[in-house]
Image (cartoon, rainbow, N blue to C red; front, side, top):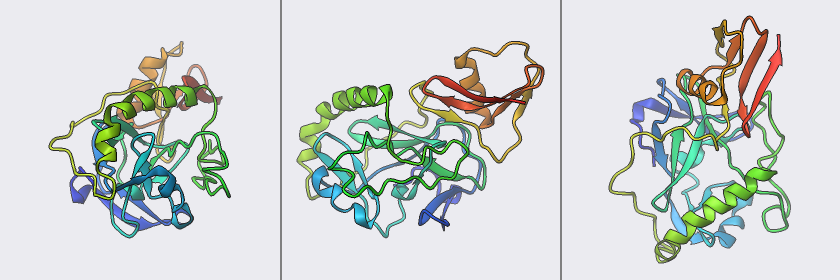
Length: 246
């Protein structure tokens, strides 16, 4: 379910990823874009539908919301390794929001954030990434220390709503009565500027702290070129600056 006005997005065909969602107006950083609604089913059953496409969202350790494949909801937001949309656990729901300013014409993308591949999720594995971004990892799977943090935070949230979500098995997850208007920045999320726009040019003689860099990228939606330092910063991944010398 989209929570932004209908005039702010359109659904179009993409070259390698089926349908996708595109911004028809600029979207401010933090804007809540939608809620992943669908029929509640056991996650083990949801995984079995992947040969038809990835149209489910895990809500707890045992249950997921599976969207209507042919519908026009936020389940059509595609994966990208340099995504501009984040997912926040909120009262048992998965809320999608703008990680940074998103520009008119830009595709809305999210990190599907699969954990390390295993026989359950990858038999065979259908999680090759086709985002074609400059920093594409080639896979929708994540790896490393962040997996432990994801699992820990997800488990805490999952336990709070486990029984409530399980009781809805076979039924549509209802929309919440109210939603936040904005989700604040969190260093947990990777953050990249829009690669098709000109970067912000700065004349600093030192690289600002990560917190300030995130604020610049988040609010402007752009990469940063430090002219005097001859440094082009594309974004921040796992609290590491992704940059090149110019």
